[in-house]
Image: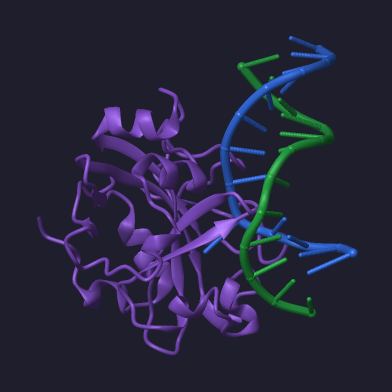
Length: 194
DNA sequence: GCTAGGATGCTCT
DNA sequence: GAGCATCCTAGCC
């Protein structure tokens, strides 16, 4: 178990987003360990990004983004889903990487139980949170700790880049990163590889 | 197989 | 009161 240190997150958001591809997200729950390899991320670059929650300043909901890097920012989307982000940059300089999709590695039976189904376990931000049992109570959790953390995985052979998904503003920015050809990325726009 | 549209409720204006 | 970093299903091809 070797969680990424704070220094990993205290860098430009787009760099962190790209480097998180292939890394392994681990959640130690009471029922057991659940983990998956990150295959899709999106970068949200703080106060200058119109698609970022932090664009219009700090609110009670997004204050974690303005805090120290290496924390988990979990927010509720569309009233029902939870989405997991990793806070980046530095304190007072908000940035976050949205984890959009995982390739399940361990704890498959727990994911299936959490999701109530056996397919499409992690190919979307809301789905992967449900599969891993991540809820709003983990907002602000320390990603360098032992309960919820990200560790080094297999380095990706190639990285794909495209516009972000589901945003009304800033969707044209090339800040979505994914593993080309992976069957576990969420459905969305046509893939652009680099 | 794919796509369009409704459900859903919290957050901010 | 409108908007939203989504998901699921019915209906169509």
